Image 1 (cartoon, rainbow, N blue to C red):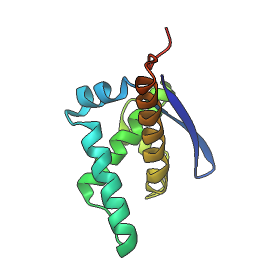
Image 2: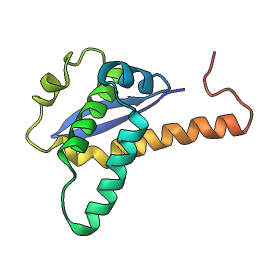
Image 3: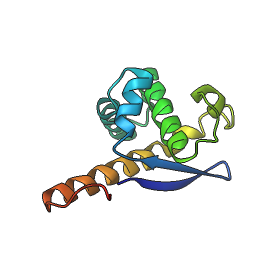
Image 4: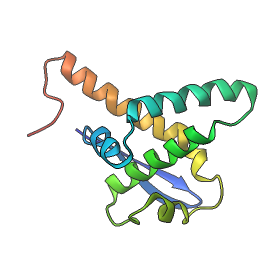
Amino acid sequence: MSMTKTIEIEGKQVEFKASAALPRIYRMKYGRDIFVDLDKANREMQANRAENSGISVQTLEAFEDIAYLMAKHADPSIPDTAEEWLEEFNVFSIYMVLEQIIDLWNLSELTQAVAKKNGMPSTAK
């Protein structure tokens, strides 16, 4: 089962997609664990919101990669690299959607967990 969400970035509607394939795609492309990176981004975002500060460069990089893959997963016609895709936006505008992307991922995970708990398959055949 996959979930999509359209988020407005600088007046442009950008679709993001979360699915069970995304962790594998992320691991194959970047050699990192999407669960670890999203958890770290979420924790830093929450902690730094109270302090009114930013998140680490490494976490920003991971977020850029995650956002790009989720957008590419939803729309294969977007550029083939995160760098090319990010060039479509002004500085920092993409970071304004971090929380929405984390929410989409968490909702996708919750949906799959509920389906498993109820004994239902998490994907349709």
